[in-house]
Image 1 (cartoon, rainbow, N blue to C red):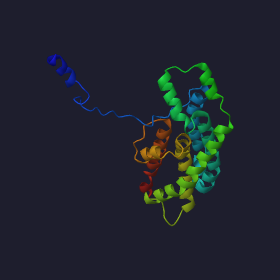
Image 2: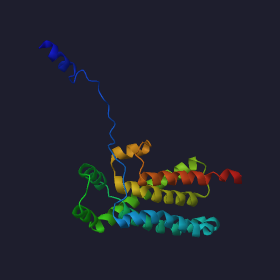
Image 3: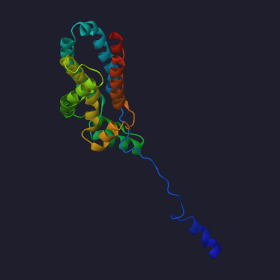
Length: 219
């Protein structure tokens, strides 16, 4: 009897080594599954790049005027993008967990998700645009100066550049994550799981940095 009980006791919970499992508390955000969202998610960067290419000569000759006129255009495009392609804050994690647990989502539940009112998407999108524009523009302006932008001259150029960066890089993040402190802690520590939204912000920052590389060549 004792020889049979001993192995059972040896395999108890106390004898097993503690296994540390890393769990992603904030999974990557995915583009909505409906055809419109999937199509526009590919069209949006093409529109942004095409507008930039068409206005490049004007941007070089008159940066302040061109940046000022393009700012509302990009703002509207960002509102359209987040409203069509991304889940709003709070819905992202819920839909992800629902899809992960059920495996298959019925046509009825998909239809309900896609029938959300336009107002419930556009209003959060406008708020998500306003927050990075108001808070991100001053912070990015200071960051641009620290990275070499003129401190006493060309201040409108710097502010407008920071505003464009805030809109392009921050609107999607605020729309899908809201003001969740835990998520923003991951973003600031650059430990956020890579997805379409966070990847777009990183590419925006990388593009701004690469665009500044030729500046010393003019000195």
